[in-house]
Amino acid sequence: MTETLDCRGMMCPMPIFQLAKRIKAMKVGEEVTMISDDIISKADVPTWCQRTGNELVEATEEDGIFTYRIRKSK
Image 1 (tube, one colour):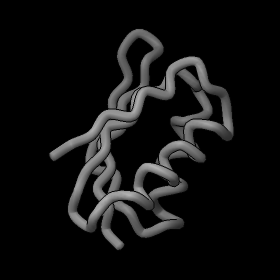
Image 2 (cartoon, helix red, strand yellow):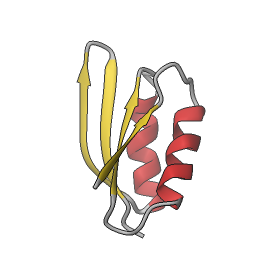
Image 3 (tube, one colour):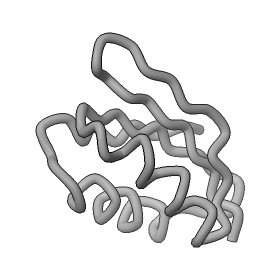
Image 4 (cartoon, helix red, strand yellow):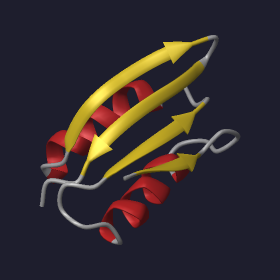
């Protein structure tokens, strides 16, 4: 099951705080799709995934909207 986390309208660092909170409540192997319009998320989300050991499964951008699919790995 993939949950959706809508972070549009939030600016750094709030999208990452919300993502971390959501991932913490999930089980290993579950996924969350995060939607953001903060350009900083292009750098923040991959870096956060690398630092926390979670998997960035997919990252897309369309019309200024960034969509990330992240799988909880730990």
